[in-house]
Image 1 (cartoon, rainbow, N blue to C red):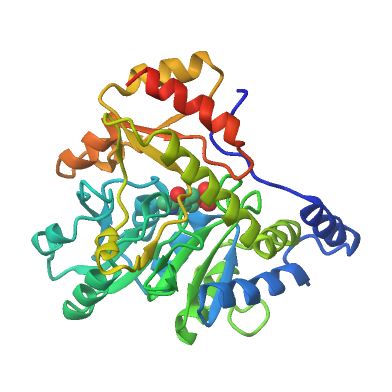
Image 2 (image 1 turned 180 degrees about the vertical axis):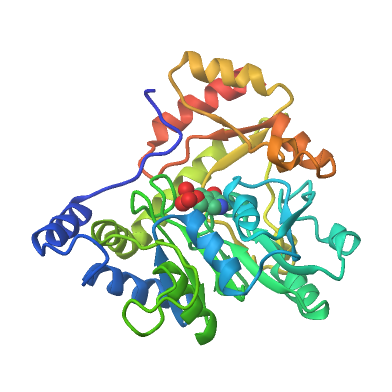
Length: 367
Ligand SMILES: *Cc1c(COP(=O)(O)O)cnc(C)c1O
């Protein structure tokens, strides 16, 4: 593919840190200086007390649930539209995921449908900020407090997105991030959980390292090996230190798409919650626009035209209830509609204005 859907932006800084990690000979977790530095700086960036790195974002989702003690007999609410890792992590714990349909405008959890699925077994809401777009945090936090539920954010796609000026991931009791090779900042494979709570931090650290207690080789619970390695940590630390530059280019890419497609009335966009806040002159929610998406009448026509021009694209996620392991769940008509009409577009920071204009010309000619 001439233009991929995503491409990490790696510079000399990432190279130098990675080589430095190799030269130190500490390339695993043990004595991983870059792991400790990253955990400290990422916690500061998000505005939380603790960051615990993991080897994948999926592991982070799993640890977030496990550190809160979620397991068999519990129910966890997840949105119908997300990458499958969110719901799989719930399944790993033995808890039952309960899928709720999404809002037609934001493509995130439809808050009005939550009350219908509450049972005495409901333990948590695992919200997902889809493609970086913030969920309605005000509503979800209040709802969780009122019904005595844990609030967990899957912020894997929402690094740097904000709600009322605070970073996403800082609102959850525990929240999960991913640094997979096509996320906003990358480690190759990697992730983290963040929390302000010391006890949950301790449980997450223990579960990450085979359930070892504070005594060497004494394992008081069954844990996992979810450790990050020092080379990946070096790369993602360099990325974090360059995040302003990355976000600046991401914003340019988004603005260019919006401009080039502004006169096309046959396209619908994923709306940012509180866009209505524009009315009072202050946009209080911000999406990092990890992936830029459009809804069109005939998605396949666009797919074909892009393919012919060597441009990569993705469909929007399948509604989780359409996947074989989750067939027992209710139908999710809104999520399915978004899936059937959605196109994910190349969204990486080094995509040039000329490339975006070419993509938009193809979209305009085919809608
Ligand atoms: C990327 C992602 C994850 C974690 O994926 P990994 O590939 O394991 O890092 C989890 N949830 C969502 C919504 C994601 O996009």
